[in-house]
Image (cartoon, rainbow, N blue to C red; front, side, top):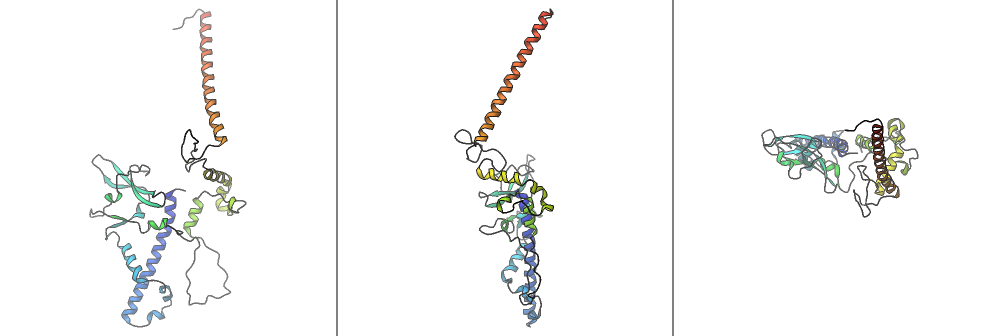
Length: 302
């Protein structure tokens, strides 16, 4: 799975959660203000008042206002630049630049950086992306990582995959209510579907259970398991390249080559040399044969 797939799913989920939280916060803030102005117990009579019991409007309201007025405060949401895109800038030589997400801090962070190609594969470390961010009036903008940093939360899970509906604690839902089927949030479903999986080693004897939806991945279960096993053993890197080392050559990783890899490499090298020698020998024989035939027939060779 690439970083684009992950960020598309994770940011979509975090954006939805942020909007829901701010809607609740704003609603609770307005109710509290109305109750204080009216100086009555209207809030206690509100059936939805329980939603505000655990909402600290003194902090969440200011945070949500900052998010809503981000550009007016001189900031741009970094999550808007995670997909590789051309910047509205061109230097004196006609060069254009692109902004996109990349892993930073040894893979523990995700930052927005400047690139020189439209695939965002050539990183230009000499440039700072904030130097190219401007608003409609031409003023520079700084990047806000408030939302993006939630996709690489340190020391905690990004989210729970189980969808839990908030229930009124003051309402009796009944003990005999039928248990609802567990729901999985959309982010986890998208990441699970896009990820390479080896499930036989984790108790799934036949791989993925839902054959109707993931039949292609079930068919490739053995291939994926073998690939992951080779990655863990250090035989290949994450791009699929063979890792060669052991005192002679290192193409990456640092693990030693297996006997099978050594045999295959030796076989192909010797085979290539042998074929080249055989072709050269045939060429010499054919040339000599043609010369002899022409000589017998009294011909000449230019």
